[in-house]
Each structure stands twice: as structure tokens, then as C-alpha cells.
Image: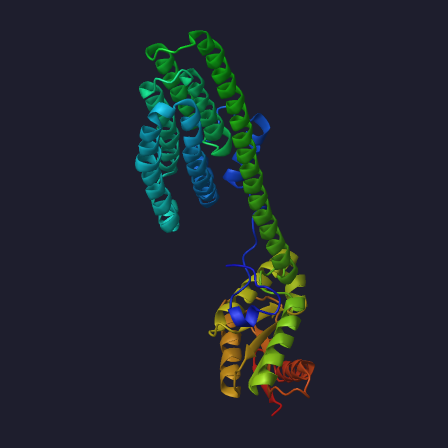
Length: 429
């Protein structure tokens, strides 16, 4: 059972929760996030479950970034036609076919599908597949550079190797491929460059070693930047995960404190403070609806004598059992029982007529008597009994709910003076 927010017990119709054994432990994901934040994650991988959560957590934002950077890459990729014209003018026509006729339609098809089926892609496709497509796009760009290098006879073709620099920088920093994908992509681009340098004769072979050095440096530094970007993204994810679970835990503690403040610590039923607020809430609603309201006051007969005769520990156990018997006697989900004083309890019955209230009161009296708790000092019966006072009234804006409680108290007084272990009623009209 769960705690009841202020003024909603009558609406929810729930009993107060049992006492908890202690504070809730830290969520496993929050604890794991804390350990990872403390010791780091140099291999850019979380444990399997957390890694999957990380990938899915930022899937929408990640795909959106890839779409935007992919569209920009189309502009840059086709903008290289200017370089083709300047460096390899003899194969400009082939370059146009490769860039505009082959790769651009393919990339636009992939980008268009991802944009139109955005939610489906996020829900259905694994992130490794999406990252793999991004990696392949980098390899396609490098392949285009290699192809044009392989067919041009221009004297300046050695400078065309600089196209691999753009592919590396764009893939690792702008598209921000996941680190290990970026490592694989960079290695593949460097391999393509080395193949071209080895198999395609260059008019100025002395320029190839410095170009290779520049490419290696570009790969190294852009991978460092890529690593830092992903590390920060993963750290922010861990911080947000831990913060979210801590806030949930705080909400749980707050709810627990709310519950404790509204539940009687001994009997486990609502306390007087909550009963008074619930009564006011129910009374205002009844006044608005023009419906009736019943209050039942229950007093354990000769309870001081019970404590003196059987001991205070037995008295506490007696009150606990009486409270449970009273709660179980109420059949409607909108009714509630609360401890009103030392050995006194109150029951609130919204929208109950005289017959329903009287029947409920009698069930409560019988339920306590049927507990058969021996009472060696009672002048009324050999077992623990209760006296019950019932008051009913039609709620009106001009009538105070305290009037109904006073009437129930008067009815309880009459039940006691008529011999106890009985129900007395009073109807206010």
C-alpha cells in the first residue's frame, strides 16, 4: 500500500501503508554511474546494459546531428568539384559522374529515408548499424578521392591527396563518429592514401612523405578531439542518470516523510491530523454536491484498566489489533479510519446515509468483540469491547464539519452511559 497525499485519502480510498524497514537503497544504475564517474571509462564503453541505455538515451539527438552534418557533407563533397577542376581538370567529367551521378543520389536516398522515417529508425534500427552507415559514408568519400587520383594524369595530382585531410577532419570532428568507429574510419582512410601513394605514380614523389605525415597528424589530433567530445558526452549522460535517480530517491524520501507525518506510528492507521484534513476535504465536497456525511467515533472500553491490568505492551498490541479490525470493517473505498486520541478512533464515511453508517458502526463493534482479546479488568465483558457513536448530516456551506464530530462525540457519550459495547446514533438532518 502507498502513502496518501493531503486531502486525497477519501478519493483514493486506500489504507495507510505499513511501516517501512528503512530507507530505500541507491538505484543500481546510479551507483554504477557514480563508480564510472570516479574511476573513468578510458575505453569509451560502459557495461552492456548501461551502454545500451546510453545509446538509446541520445538516439534522437544523435540521429538529428547525423542528418544535419550529412546534409552539410553533401555540400562539401560536391563543392570539391572546384578542386577537381583546378587539380584534375582532365577527369572533370568523370568527377561529376562520380560525385553528382553516383554518390550524391545514394547519400540523398539514405538521408531522405532517415529523415522521413525518423521515429522508426530510432525505434527499430540498432545504433551500431546507424554508426556503420556513417562510417561507410566516410569510406565512400575517401574512395571518390582515390578513384579520381587513379584516373587523372594531371601534373598536380599529388596535391589531390589533401582531399583525405578533409575526409578525416569532417568524419572525426564534424560528424563526430563514435570513437572506435572514428578509429576504424581513420585507419581505412590512411590505408587508402598509402595505397594510392604506393600504386599511383606521382609527378613529385618527394611530396608524398610530408603529405603522409600531415595526414597522420590530422588523424591523431582529430581523434583526440573526437575522444574528448565523446568522453564529455558520456560524462554528461552519467551525471544526468545519477541526478535523475537521486531525484527519484529524494521524491521517495519525501513521500515517506509525508506518509510518516500522516500515519499513526503505533497502529499504522491515519493519525488525527490527517483525519481532520480529510474530513474538511470531504465536507467541502459533500457541501458542493449536496450529499450526506457520517462520522463514527470509537472508544475502547475501560482501556486504562486494561493497561493497568495487562501492561502497556499488551495495551499497545490491543490498540494495533483494534485499529486493524476497525479498518477491515469498512467496505467502501472512500471510507477511512484514523486514530483520534489515546484509545479513540474516528471513521469518516462520505455520502453515507443513516442505514449505511449504522451498519458500518455495528460491524466495527462486532469486529472488535470477535477479536476475543481477554480483558481481566472490564466491568462490561470478559473481552475487549468498544463503544461507538455515530452522527450523520447533510453537508451545507453554512454548517461546520466540527458540528458533525461534536454530534458523534455526544452519541459516543450516550453509548458509554447506556452500558458500553454498543452503538448510539445521532442524526442532524
